[in-house]
Amino acid sequence: MAKKMVAIVGRPNVGKSTLFNTLAGERIAIVKDTPGVTRDRIYADCEWLNHKFTIVDTGGIDKESDDIIMRSMREQAEIAIETADVIIFVTDVRSGVTAADMQVADMLRKSRKPVVLCVNKVDSYEKFEPYVYEFYNLGIGDPYPVSASGMTGLGDMLDAVLEQLEATGDVDDEEDDTPRVAVIGKPNVGKSSIINKLLGADRLIVSDIAGTTRDAIDTRVKRNGNEYVFIDTAGLRRKSKIKDDIERYSIIRTVAAVERCDVAVLVIDAEEGVTEQDTKIAGIAHERGKGMIIVVNKWDLIEKDTNTMNRMKKEIQTKLAFMPYAKMLFVSAVTGQRLPKLFDTIDTVIQYSCMRVQTGVLNEILAEAVATADPPSDKGKRLKLYYITQVSVKPPTFVIFVNDKELSHFSYVRYIENKLREAFLFEGTPIKIIIRERTKKSDSLI
Image 1: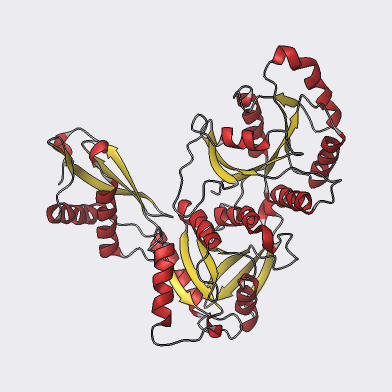
Image 2: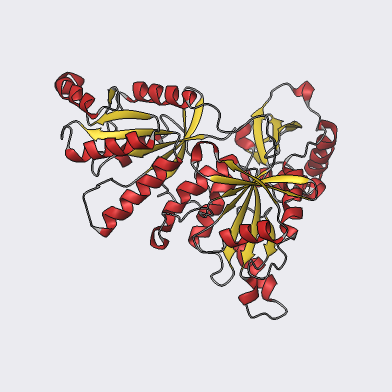
């Protein structure tokens, strides 16, 4: 099930980023940094009362300003509103209800999205209580007084967010197990061209289906008896609001698409190579455990020698070193070169992401790995690996029971992962290894 999205919006200087950073902090949720995703990202995975969701930060909304920066911030907020399941509308108790707040409230009513009204900077409820009631004038609903910096009042606000999230229903149709493929990447790398070529060349369109709560169009296609749903992040049916000079806000659409997909197809411009933005976008799919295919587009425009492709592969492997499992294709959306292979590659990635391995076979591989390289030790105490079992798929997830988690150095866990890949390949999919302590020596299989 995809995580739902909560957008934090409001006029400038009301404390949106402070609230975002507080919700993304360790006291409410543990947010793990992933290689390739910079720390100034505008989204974070959060958890409250065992419910997980994604929050999105936005720039301030100022509908009256003609300043180019303010216009860009307004457009960014509109993208977040379009993408979100629930919106947290942040206001400032010290300023009271302003004309700008009224305009934002009007925008949110038109969006028809569930809204939780947050009145920020209420450091003392007794002091500010009379002023909080003023915010009923926005016509958005009950105001929730909080102090984002002081971390007070957040529980009631988050309870309201969860109530609204539950009311939105499921993000995906649980009965529909058709593989979902998100085509992601920077603007202008050829995402729409690739989809159009795939759909137009063999007239593969079966039907258009509404994209759940995302206000997007997903395209259901059929090829060789297999059906797929392509999730468009490039504005295939309409002009995208994202400007080329504010690329980082394309991440908002990317996060929403990746949450719903089984396989992510990252499109890279062959002439530009792997950019920092490509790395950020790849990190989104990696940290969510999605299958990954890297498609290098515009390959027909590259002057080649005998080592051109190998050099590009090495560049990708170096700059996207955190996902060595990713499959690669070199294509041209214009000529159609190698594009038909994309469907076969998608099938391969889905196969491996859904693969299950019997516990007995896994423990044979683990025993061989331990015999080949001794587990790490510290101060005379050595790591003991009792047994391994697979607990889930998408991505394949394994639990290894050990005597002491502190001894399980990441390099040895990576070594075990490599042994699993040698034995079972797991092409195109990340795999997850969870280390758990078990003290019963009688259970040791290794």
